[in-house]
Length: 187
Image 1 (cartoon, rainbow, N blue to C red):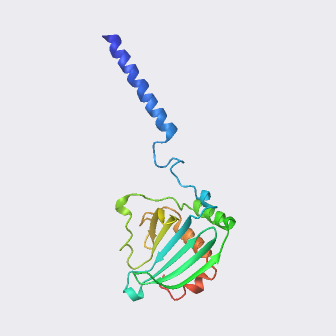
Image 2: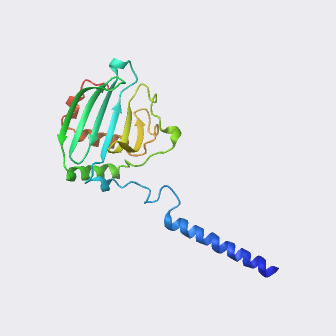
Image 3: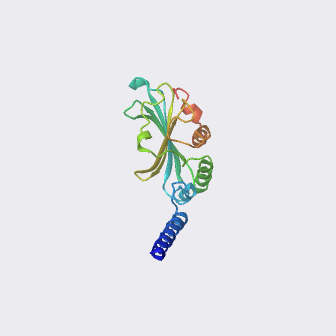
């Protein structure tokens, strides 16, 4: 009987060891390199990076948003009025895969893909009502592959865990004359 119990314990330990080994080899957490998006892989694709800046929650006619999309062929800005998305101004600027690759590397180093993916925190509406909300997206065609958000109301309000201010500046720097285009907006 003693030999049978010892044998079963040994088998159990071997199985436990194999499970732990497989977990280590194939990744058992969400921080493994395999689960992290590598932005540099998108430099020669049609995947775009989008930042949406939304102003304070105001009357519809006073509410403003700015959409900036950065891609390998062009960068685009849209100035939007109201909650229904009335585009009041739109411009495109030529780009190239080398420029896009540098932009992707910069935002990657600043933590663009770092964030809280929990469902209960995904809805940014209503947060920071007297400040700004920033939505950071990775878009492949019509599919949003990743979306995080931050606000101007505090460091950790939102789901975004990258360096918010630096990434906002990088997006704005992709649009020639950004300051002049947005001078009259409450953002």
